[in-house]
Image (tube, rainbow, N blue to C red; front, top):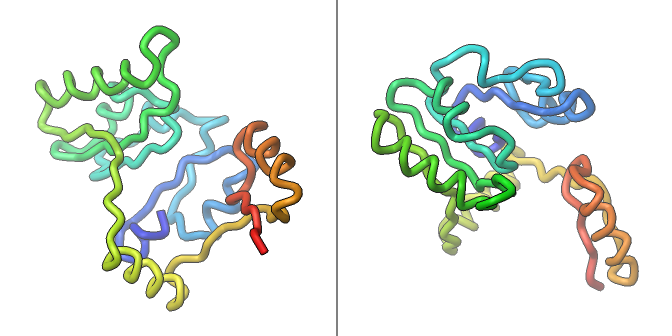
Length: 160
């Protein structure tokens, strides 16, 4: 979200009630509380939807994309039979029949890209959101916190 804002995009964040303030604080122009509203049943015309959790199906997001919009997703857990493969198959099928692009999130790490991100952090355009830090001796507690699900911000283990 912060990268999109840094490059001038209008951003809508989808978050729980508990995290709406955090999402606003890092730049969302609008926040949709998914505990109260299904964003896939609302307004249409999103140019890009970036989904990390795999909460919504590709078909549901397809309904709110602009005519030539793009869905980038990490697929999440997917269904109980095929896991994330089910969402990958759905996205591939939808690509064939719509003018939209639905694809998996892939990242290519390059020195140039890392330097661009470093510059954005140093200029204040990107602010890392760190929820909690743990010393290496408490790494087990850090993992348990993440396993509980959706801690606010990143959980960091500090190696001295």
